[in-house]
Image 1: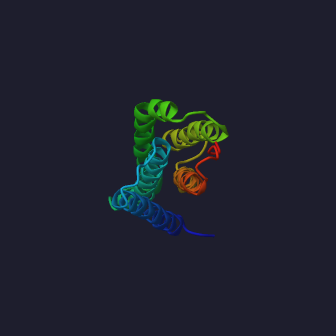
Image 2 (image 1 turned 90 degrees about the vertical axis):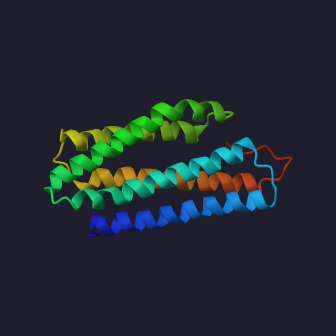
Length: 170
C-alpha cells in the first residue's frame, strides 16, 4: 500500500505541471497578442486556482507534521485549515463562477455536489465524528482539487481546438 506522503508528493508534482502549463498558455497568448475570450480566461483561472489549492493542500501536512504533534491532531489541524480555505474560496468565488458560466451544465452541478461532499468529509475528519482523524479523507479532498484542475485543462483544450463556427461543448 502506498504511503500518504508518496501520494501527496505525486499530487503536488502533477499540480505543479498544471500550474506551469497554465502560466505557459498565458504567456504565449500575451506574446501572440491573442485576445483571450472570457470563457478561455475563466478556464485558465480555474486551472490556476485549483492547481494552486491542490499544491498547497498536498504540501500542508508536511508543514504541520514538523511540529511533532500526534497523527490525529496533525490531521485534524491540516483538515481544519483546508476546510477554512475551501469555505472562504466558495463564499468569495461561487457567485463569480455562476455568473461567468453561460449555461450551467453537468460539470458545474457535479462540482457543486462534489465540493459539498468533500467539505463534509473534511469536516468529519476535523471533528473526528465517524472516524479518528486520518490521512484518507484528506487525500480524497486533495484528489478532488487535482480533478478540478484537470477538468479546467480539458475544457481549455476543448475551447482551443473547437473551430470558430462550432458552439463550445458544455
